[in-house]
Image (cartoon, rainbow, N blue to C red; front, side):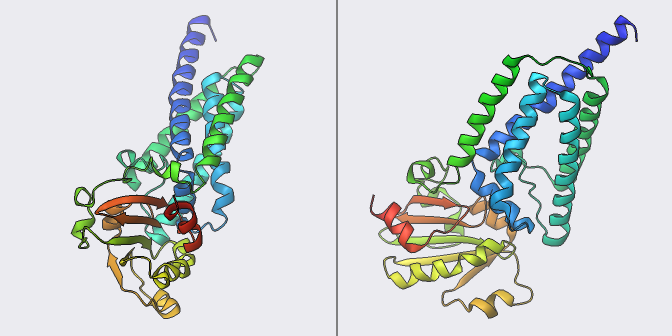
Length: 302
């Protein structure tokens, strides 16, 4: 290969690394700041040990992005990334076919960046092409200096901190949710329920396809039994086609069934819990439904 061809391939490799590296970093950090929601999405895929798998996926994606950006073993990282994309694509295809889940969760809870399933697969094919170019044109014997490892370590430490902290159900974190302290009339909720301004409400958004939602149903019963709230509303998306849910739980409170697309309008993910007081959403808990004791201790006593 002459010098001119070498310069061309180097520029191609650089462009591919920057594109994929930036995309991986952005996607990884978008999931890291809402790790709980991403964990729940994987549970909806049908992967029950998602609480352990989700952080590994997030940190691995960020590590791959940082390595590609800093040119740390790009050939090896490109192979690892191609394997990851193939696995994720197959998992998403499985969830799409068997559970009708159309959100791949690639960018966490950033709804404006969601793609249709077809566009998602096209993007993944393009990424595979870029990663193959990185593998083909990268220097096989490139020396990695320690400063690059130091920079990558800092990025991973920040990612690990964000990922770990976003699993915690803390008031300070929930205040950053876009629905926090929103007036109910400014949201989509009035389309589905009537809110009396001087009453307190607990609104639960669940999904039949979310197995973790089933696990939280006993918690919801405790909220109702406490008698501390004027109204409890449970919205559930999808369809209980075999009546398994109703036959097993026999809920004593009404379930407001809705289409999945309607569920995503009032909540980014299922389960989500809103506490409404004085016509304002005071607290938002996304990705789980805590026990009544935990909610009362961490929220109502503050």
